[in-house]
Length: 185
Image (cartoon, rainbow, N blue to C red; front, side, top):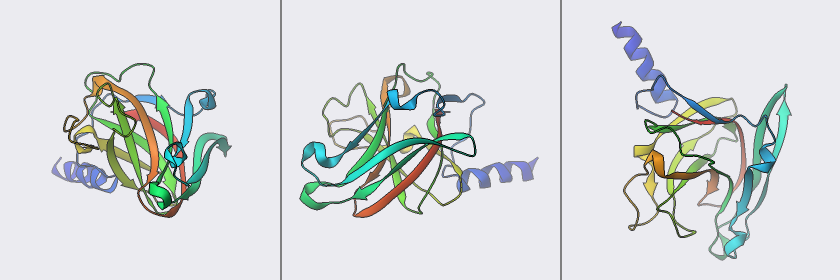
């Protein structure tokens, strides 16, 4: 039993989290049912930046995915591209984190969460993760999300979540991230 516990902890470390998993998981997106009607692409151009990109919904080996690509530029006070999903309902009350299945170009990406308390456009909660060329599961505990400013709670509450975004952010780089699933745990 002790070796099983160590194996679970080691797997959690490899997947990006030391938080215990729960038996309940809620899938919010697998890109099978018209994701283009729910997801929106944004770049820093909404505030005068010059980053460019796109999100494409495609299939690979019969598996639907979202692929966000682009060029992130910090010129002109910019520095982001993102794909965002507005939630139709809050996650279950016992939600402790966000789960993603992703792959990419070996860069660092972020999840941005907006809540009932993030009323200004530049307010969000952020947690980072690194991707590799092969598919991997990422678990980001809500407690590890950082508020973008002092006027927000220290960490987001599950029942106040309004949107989830996958974001290339903060430095000049080429972005390429594929997302196969997003959910709560």
